[in-house]
Amino acid sequence: EGRWHLQPEKLAQSGGITISTEDHRWGQARLELEVNAMEESNGHVAQLVDERVLLVHPIPDLPELTDSCETKGGFEDVEVHLGHCFRIRGFDVDFASLKIAASSGNLSIGP
Image (cartoon, rainbow, N blue to C red; front, side):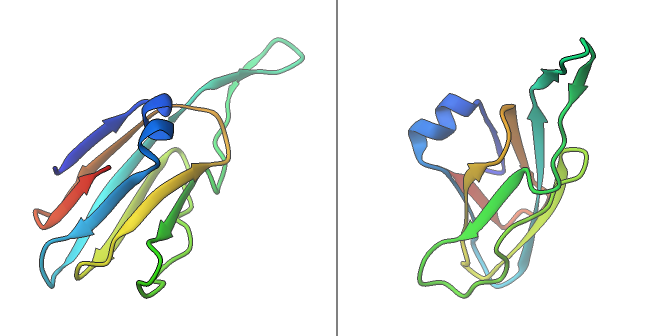
């Protein structure tokens, strides 16, 4: 709770991560995505950062506050409100690890 660090294979096994609030206040969490370096054909190694690396989906039957969060440089703040849960379910690129830290004390983070 409050902090979550997950390797890709663990995310696949768990089926996703849920971020939810425990009271009526807005909560904010910071997502840190470490993407794997990709070697280009010319031999250079580039760190691939996609604007839509991390997809955050509302859990079904809850109001749709956002359909995705866009990451630049692997960081994104996500706002969650009043028991509304967001589930991190998919990635567009290969990634090495995912770290989530709640900057609000009312957030619960877990599988």
